[in-house]
Each structure stands twice: as C-alpha cells, then as structure tokens.
Amino acid sequence: MTTTTETAARTTVLDASGVTMRFGGLTAVRNVDLQVNAGEIVGLIGPNGAGKTTFFNCLTGLYVPTEGKVSYKGTVLPPKPHLVTKAGIARTFQNIRLFANMTVLENVLVGRHTRTKEGLWSALLRLPGYSKAENASRERAMELLEFIGLQDKADHLARNLPYGDQRKLEIARALASDPGLLLLDEPTAGMNPQETRVTEELIFAIRDQGIAVLVIEHDMRFIFNLCDRVACLVQGEKLVEGTASEVQSDERVIAAYLGTPFEGAPGADEVAEVEKAEASAATTTSTEEEDNR
Ligand SMILES: Nc1ncnc2c1ncn2[C@@H]1O[C@H](COP(=O)(O)OP(=O)(O)OP(=O)(O)O)[C@@H](O)[C@H]1O
Ligand SMILES: [Mg+2]
Image (cartoon, rainbow, N blue to C red; front, side):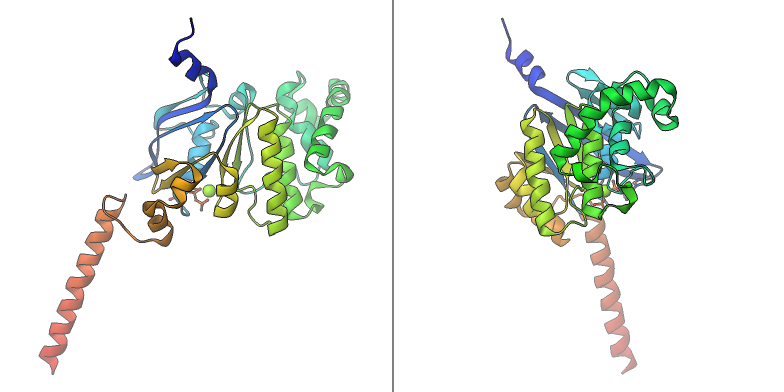
C-alpha cells in the first residue's frame, strides 16, 4: 500500500529545511524552508541582498549552511559542489562562469565530466582517455547546443559570444550533467526583451524534459509568466510563498520591493528606531532654531 507520505516523498525533488547561513554577525539566510516538486518551475524573488544567491550556494554545497538540511530526492546532500552535481543538481551563476578561452562545444563537454569516468582534469588537460570520452559525449553536447540554439557557434570561443548567448551556454553546460533539478541565478540579467522571451520558452522546454527548475530573477513579468510557485525572500527570511497571482498581489511583497516597512517585517524594528531617532533629532533642531530667534 502506498501512503500519502510516500507519494509526497517521491514527488519532492528538493527539500530544504531550516536553512540558515551566517557570516560573522550577519544572517544572510534565516531558517528558510523550500520544496521543489517534480515537474515544477519555482521562482525565488526578493530585493538586492535578500539572500537569494547565498541560499543557492547553500543548496549546491558552495557554502555549508550554519543550520538546516538539504535533501535531493529523499537523500541528504553532502555539502560538496561536485557531489551535489553528481547527485543531480546543476546550476548557473549570477556572474557568468564560463571557460572564456575554450570553445562553446568544449564548455559543454566540460559540463559532462561528472557523467564520464575520465573526470574534469582529463577533460581540461586533454589526456588520452579523454578523446574517447569526448567522442562519446560530443553527440550529446551538440544535441544540447541545438536545443539552446547555439549549434552554429559550436567552434566560437566562449569569450566572443554576445552576453545573452553566454548565459544560454551556461544553461547548456549545466544541462550537460543530466540534472534532475536546475538552479538558475538571474538567467535573463542583461538580456533584451526578445532574448528574455526566448529564455522563457527554453525553461518551459527544460521543464517538459522532466527537469525541475528553481529560478532567481528580478524581472517580475518573466517570473510570473513562468513559475508555478514563487517564494519571496526579504532580509534572509522567506516572507511569502504562493502562486504567481497570490505573490504578485501580496502587499508585503510590494512593500519589500518599494522599500516600505510594514508591521512585522524583518528589520521593521530597526526602521522604527531610526525613524524615532530622526523625529526626535528634528524636534531638537526646531527647538534650537526657536531658541536662536
Ligand atoms: N561570502 C560572504 N561573506 C559575507 N557576506 C556575504 C557573503 N555572501 C553574501 N553575503 C552577504 O549576504 C547578504 C545576501 O547576499 P546575496 O548575494 O545572497 O543576495 P541576493 O539576494 O542574491 O542579492 P542580488 O539580488 O543583489 O543578487 C548580503 O548582505 C551580502 O553582502
Ligand atoms: Mg544574487
């Protein structure tokens, strides 16, 4: 007999619970829970400095969270980036990280190293075993380049690609590790509206191939078009989570973006204290002005 809990465990791809990341006195991520289920595209939004990238770094083993647990398909992940990739989570970076002096195709081939026994160094140093693996991987890499629309630029150096193409190439390289979950950190940053629409279609196509997606973006139109569910981080805390329409009409989210504090908001106490101090300073100044008259 299958219990409800077993069914839920099967469909949850990513399960992050109580994730906290402190840097000295700064808590960049505070007690964040987030699930991504099979077949879902989930958005992660929040103002600059909210902790979105730090949270990704905790999910992918770049940071060891101060507290909390991250599981992928029911197994707790070791906090080591290569083991996380091997387990099935791939990512792109907010600041593009490509091998600038390698070709487009080579960048994708390097992305396959976790799935070939020759490994990364063999790929980078082109050791003899690599040529065999390269032949085996080349077809898959070309397929991926076709999928993202860069097949005609396979021999170009990565550094010569326009910015939008570099972002797409990062996605292809991430896909080369055959992930079950893809994390995208601002995939349309610096893109024009047409490139953004193409990226939107690309992400739908990735989801349709059975890969769950968690995406950070500041472009709200893009996020609300794309995502089944959206979570909003503010000052490291998950403030709101819901469907696109629930989140876009939530006044706490609007306030967070406009910088307007609201009752119970993280940091609201500090804001209230500053306002009080400013008000009392203003009263003192006006009294002094009156005294000087
Ligand atoms: N390695 C680090 N050491 C110390 N502080 C850090 C580190 N990484 C991030 N922070 C701090 O953590 C907070 C969250 O930063 P993070 O980059 O995660 O925000 P973000 O939501 O991704 O912002 P943006 O939308 O601008 O990319 C910021 O105050 C940042 O300065
Ligand atoms: Mg960021």
